[in-house]
Length: 372
Image 1: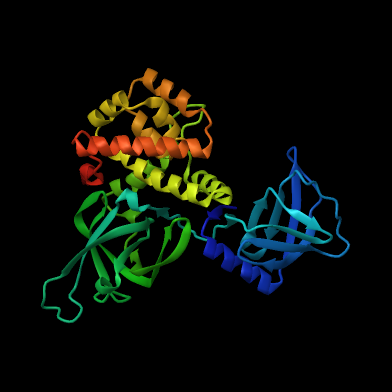
Image 2: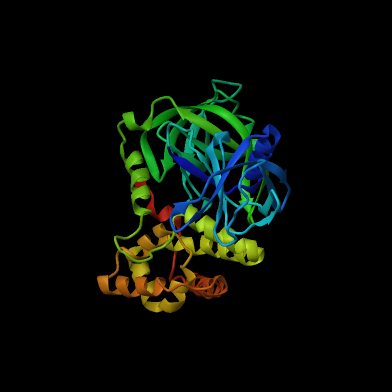
């Protein structure tokens, strides 16, 4: 069974409220030394902004270890989450609101999400909405995600006026690829676009999310490189072929940031912002990358990249010598407190900005536009 991890606080809250309203049964247990203790029955007792309380079913065992994590499972969407710290008062158990939950994956086709710094674009033509004799309208937008069967992207409310549900889109560019022939898709849904800012989800004013389905799946069309591009990204995100630490995958990165936020929300936001700034280093050309690694303080850079993605580490180190790669990964493997990571990020971002102003670095995602 495939599971997916949700970090959207509003979604988590709504999901737990649904479980509370349905008065569904929970199964809880603790784990110690790789062995699970007795599984107990419970139900959600209260859900508020900062804390959750569950109540053990009458007659259930009340023996709990204060040092072992608590696992909570609901059959509703096969939801599961863990809390390392909790308080127990009789049959009531309370703990901080979870910053992530895992649920059963219902999608049959995997979707590949993009972040804004990926700068992945979809460009398309669409017939004039009122006068077919007029030239097609040309538009472009930032991709949110892609699968072999469709895409989603964002537009402003003003732009959306020409694109009702059912509109045909003749796609001419997808991600970094300019297509030799337009590929046909149809708009299936339109909804408000939710974005993440400073760790909180909210409806972005004036921005709309559009979902479109390809009339012919990507895997059956001639320009296979679009699929290989996605596959390549998934492969690269696994990181370098080394035994030691070499960056975080997306879920581990989100988990680390949420954990920092529990103790210091402001620090977590600063680190998140800096991670996004540092991620632009992926767009360095090979020669710029090599010069950058020669000029930069590597101890400081390693500390700054401690919470960065495996993909960024891969892109930075793939073209350097084996010795330089090994030395840097050794430094990267050293654990750092969150405050030290943020301080190093700040210094490296200043260094990068100075290099950009001097024209020594060009961090441009469009420099790698590909034609197929």
